[in-house]
Length: 290
Image (tube, rainbow, N blue to C red):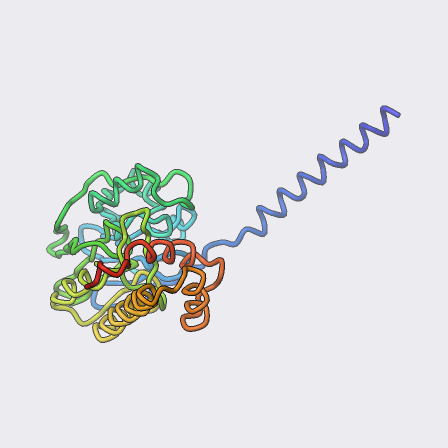
């Protein structure tokens, strides 16, 4: 009887080991690709947010660094265009798909973010954040700049939107900006836990639109242009005004949920519905836009 129990236990251990190995083998390796934007400015796409790669003869400046698991793939893609090391990483905001790579880059580079983005990481404001996201060591409130190899990158904070610490990264010589998730996907995601605002979002983009640029690297999606950013801004306003009008009509949260699913394609249990809708109901009270 004891031999039988031992055999069963051994089989269970072997089975668990096989399952663990299979899970490890089946874990997808991040598939990233790098594309030239302009001159020495590139963009890495795939798995997480877009990573801008700015090459100089004294090193590389990155905008965002995706997930921790993307670190080696990011370095591999950078290696296809330069042998210069990464010197700086500028976070557009604190979310894990844009800043989880910080911990792996901090031994080799300085990480910069807005002060609010650092605070949000330290206070664990993102409920579904990966474990161990490291905050920036250098922060700014309104603006800062990096000068490397005779080239300039500027980081500006224009106000709240996706979070309360969204940075617009500006490459003046290339007339290009990286918006982070102030432009991403087809509908705005407002992180109310992280200080975001659907009311302030359009004001923030209006301020950013005054920069001299023609090319836009969004937080997610293909590189685009200033006209597309304006369209995105107007769609944010359209969504906000729609929900505001529904609230004024006395529609319930459930009524508005159904309309957002029908007219905007939101999923019933999607992150937009979980994050945006409850916040909209609070922020878009009738007195707020009058």
